[in-house]
Every structure is written in C-alpha cells, then in structure tokens.
Length: 436
Image (cartoon, rainbow, N blue to C red; front, side):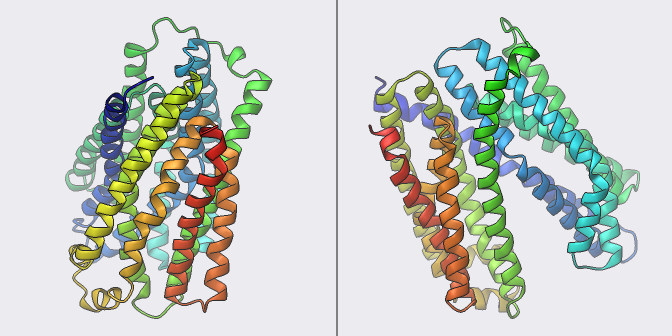
C-alpha cells in the first residue's frame, strides 16, 4: 500500500498541470474578444464583441454536450492502466476517437439547423447575430480537431499524464494569439480572421497531440478497429457515457435557467449574478484540477484492485478539498467586493452585489465534495451514482426557486441546494462502493 506522502505527491503532480490547463481554456474567448475590440472599422467594435460572445456561447453549448468523450475516456483508460491491460488501453482510445470523429461529422452536417435554432432563440441586433453566424460557419470546421482532442486529453489523463494536455493547451493559445493578430490587425480580416485563427489553433493542437502520442506512447500497441468496436465493449462505453451525458444536460439546465431567470429580474441583477458566478467559476477551475487527479488515481487503483490505496486516496482528496474550500470561503468572505471591483467599475452593480455576497461564502463548502466525487466516480466508472444524484439536485434547484418567491435570494438558495444535495447524495450513494 502506498504511503500518504506518496499519494499526496501523486495528487499534487496531477492536479497542478490540470489547474493550469483549466485556466487556459477561457483564454481563447478572451483573446478573440480583445482582438475584435481593437478593430478600427467605424463604430462596429461593440457588434464584433457581441458576435464573438454569441458565437462562443453556441460552441460552448455544443461541445459541453460532448464532454463525455473526455470524462468517459479518462475513466476507462485509468482502469486499463491500473490493470496493465495495454490492449484495452489502445482500444479505448480507438473507440473514443471514432466516436469523436462521427460526432464532429454530425455537428458539421447539422450546422445549418444549429444556426437556425441559435438565431431563433437568441435575442439581439440583426447585425450582431449575422456576424456571430459568420463566425460560426467558419469555426464549425474545427469540430473534428476539438472533439479529437477531447478523446486524446481524456486518454492522457487516464494514463496518469496531465502535463501533456497542459502544454498542448498553452500551445493552442499561443497559436491562436499569433494568427488572431496576423489575420485581424495585419490583414484586416475582422471576425473571419478570428474564426480562422481558432480553426488553425485547434488543428495545430490536434496534430501536435497526435505526434506526442506516437512519439511517447504508440510503441508496442497494436491498433484494431474491429476489436475496439466489439458489441459488449461499445455497450459498456455508451452506458457510462450516456449517464455522463444526462448529467451534463442537468448541469446545462441549471446554469442556463440561472441566467434566464436572472435576465427576467430587475436591473442590474443579471450583471450582479453574472459577476458573482465568476467566483464560482474561479473556484471550479481549482476543484476540477483535483477532480481530474481523482479520475486518474481512483481509476488506476480501481483497475488494479488496490482498494486500500483507493480508500486512502479518496480520504486525502477530501482533505485537500476541505482545505481549499475553507481558504476560498475566507477569501470570498473578506475580499469578494474587491474581486468584483476588478471585474467591473460599475458602482451600482457592485452596490447591489453586496446584498448577495454571503451566497459566495457558501459556494466552496457546499460544492467541493460534488466536484471531487465527480472525478472519483468517473475514475471508478460509477456513472449511475452521478446521474441519480444530479437528477435529485436539479429538481431541488427548480423547486426551491419556484416555491420560495422566484426572487434573487431564492435563485441562489436553489443553486446552493443543488450543489449541496449533489455533494451529500454522491457521498452517501458511493460510500459502500469505496469503503466496503
């Protein structure tokens, strides 16, 4: 059995690169927004910024639905790594990559209906929406690269390698920045240049990721598509990923309705809630780093049938999560207003936000267990527990909001109950699977 020191070293060595990777993810959108914000075409900067925001939102929604490719792949791979089953390791990557390619082709094939639905449901100026769709129709061709990297990233994490995805994420952002500046500021390609830069960055990332795989891992593996798509393996793969997909739908339902409900409230509550939610997002970047480490280690020990190491790893992860959540509670309790002041200089927004900042203190302590158990259960391939827990938690969010007045406090109370119920239910439901 591994010592506490060894396990802590493994947790941190996997977590830190994952956190860095998570932080780089929103940089693509930030860089795109910053570049179009400097377009000199008369009076259209605001339109371009709005179009990038809408276009990014559409892709976030699409790709979020395919998040199971990354999570499911990491869980299966980690268990194959733990059991030292090299044949299954390469079969998982083959299987996941084939599904990613089919999914990407499906997205490209449906690009016109997707654009139509987006245009129907998004309110805004016609000029902004048209620019957003112009961006969408170019960037959609990066779907094979984006989904392909989901599979490869999940595979690397399952193979206990979180550094490769980190370096790939950094490289993608560098390439994106270079081509953004070249296409937009040098060649005046405006929003088309931003879209093409993203496409180039995504395919560059895919090519380098594939190259690293062949250089670092491929030797000794024998790829067989026929073996990888055997019926019983495909059924197991889709069963687990189906649960993860349903979980993702619930997350989208809660977060989307949170924004919808905020938009229906009096000014400036939409802005207030959007800013406060950034504190949740910031916390999630750190907790997801530990969750990814949980996927790697818990899957590895589950696959190797090392129950004592699994149990000790879960306990250590919960200790790390408790410590981090307490630190975040203190930071949010004393400095939330200062953090919001960095995000906006609108005094009326900051003034109103102060009435709701006490909810930010509850986010870390109610949410950290849910983040960690997501990673633990993905590694153990106990996706049914995740699915069932989030069904109840999602129901609690809507019940509390609609029963207790449909105001901003009831909205936040519903969100906190959603986090807390996920944490409590996953702990209870998974206890006998871990500490049996």
